[in-house]
Image (cartoon, rainbow, N blue to C red; front, side):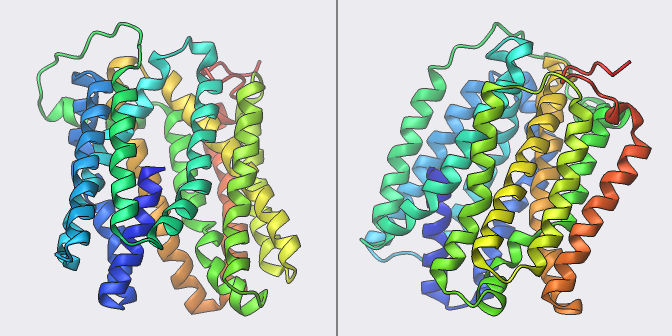
Length: 383
C-alpha cells in the first residue's frame, strides 16, 4: 500500500511542478532503471544473505526516502530532480526487495502449500492495488506531506513485521562471486524448459495484451464517460484478480496446471478482443473482471512453478531475472500499446494485441510441450 500511495503522490506532485506529461512518463522509466541495472547483483545478494533482513532494510530505506519527501514538501524545498532521485532510490530498494520476497515464500510453508501461499500473496498485492491509489489520492488532498508521512510510517511498520517473520532454517550460499555465479540465474532458466517457457510466455503476452494502458482513451472516446468511469474500468480487473486469487488460496490448482495456464492466457486474449468492441461501460467492466481472473490464474501457476522447480540456493537469482521480465513486459507493454494505437487506431491495436496473445499461447504450447503437459505445480507431467 505504501508503494502504491507513493506512486500516486509522486505523480500528482511531478505534474503540479512541471505541467509536463513527459516528466510524468519519466517517473516510470526512472523507477525501472535500477531493476535493469541491478538485476544480476540483486539475485546474488538474495541468495547469499538473509532474505528477510534484506527486505526489512530496504523498507527502512524506503521509509527514510519518503519521509525526506514529506519534510521537503512541507518546507517547499522540492525540485523535480530531487523527486526523480527519490524515485530512483525507491526503485533500487524494490529491485533488492522483490526477488528476496519471491524467493522467501517457499521457505515459509511446505512445498504443497506454496501455490496457496502465492495466491494469498497475490490477493494482498491486488488489495493494495485497489486501496492504495485511492487512499493516496484522498490523503494528497490535505497536502503532499500527508501521504508521504503516512507512507513512511507504513514502511516502518512493514519493516518491523518483515523482521519478525519466522522462516525455515536456510544455509546461505557461500560460493565465490564470479562471472559464472552472477550469470547462473540466466543459465539456469535457459536450461529449464518449463521455467523458460512460463516466463517468456508471460513476457510476450503482457507485451501484446496491454489493453489496460489504453483505458483512458476508451473511457473518453469510445465509452463517453468521465473520470469516474475510468476509475471503474481500472478497478474491474483488480476485482477479478483479487476474487480469483482468494479462491485459488482456498482451492489450489492440483492437476492440469499447464493446460489451465495456457487456457487462462487464451481467455485473456479473447477477453481483450471482446473488450475492444464493447461500447457499454457495464459490459466493458464485466470483460475486464474476466481479464483480471484469467491473468491471476496464469500468474499463480507461473510463480509457483518457478519457485518450486528452483532450488533454494538459486531462487534469488532466478527471481531477479523473473522480476526483470515482469517489469520489462509491463513497461514495454504500455509503450507498445501506445505506439500501435497511434499507428493503427485504438480498436485495431487492441484487437491485434488480443489475437497476438492467443497466437503466442498456441505457439508456446507447441514449443514447450512439457509445460503444456504439466500436471501439478511441482513439475510432474501428465501421463
